Image (cartoon, rainbow, N blue to C red; front, side, top):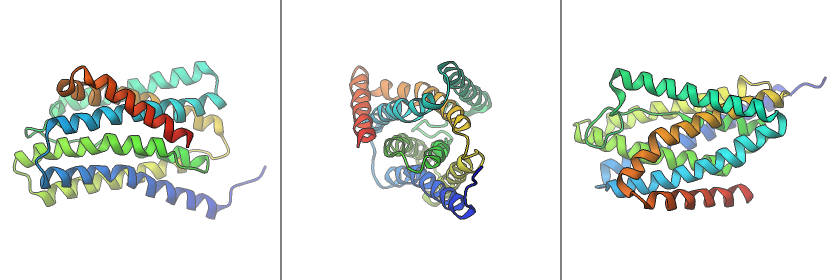
Amino acid sequence: MGGHHPLGVNRCVGEAFLWGALGASALVVGALLAYQLALSRRLIAVVMALGTGVLIGSVSFELVDDALEHQALVWVAALILVGALVFTAGDWVLDRHGGEQRKDASGAQADGKPLAIVLGLTVLQGRVSVSLLAGIALSNLPEGMSSSSGLKVAGWPRDRVLLMWTVVVLVSALAAAAGYATLDPRSSRTGALVQAFAGGALLAMLADTLLPEAYEVEGVLTGTLVVIGFAVSLGLSAA
């Protein structure tokens, strides 16, 4: 059996780290925008809805589609459900400890979700998913804007908020690298299961966080914005 050259593996881990940091850096950009500009809730909601559509498309075209190429439908469906349940359980724990208002723009505590771990999986295949990267960035941007707007109202200094998000970016980059390093590059079956798990977690995150907040502001326009994002994801995947 042929092995993978250590230098090649290390290079891919490094690439996963950099792409993970890039996807999460939208949190820092969102924080800067929140402190420099008077951001409206409508603008944040529009970005949330568009990001939701892009991520739904990315999960469909990148994660689930790739997983189905290497695993049976029943296993992919089961891991999608497990991923959703794990995310829901984690979100429930956060809410039970007072985190239900963590993204409220009126002054609540913030929380970062390092979604970039799934970027490490695309590096396994020798490429980076542009649509997945765009979806993660578009979902992280309103996270950074909304949470940082609340922290600004609560009196947090800008440098403290930027430091907090920088730590989240670093954790996200490490998670992306771990997404590559902890998987056996020779086992597409293992990668497929993790892809399905990540897809389920992302879908649950969209349904629990981005969509409700976007609909609260945009109302019936939310659906159209989500579909526009989905179409953008389709175009990026086909490019």
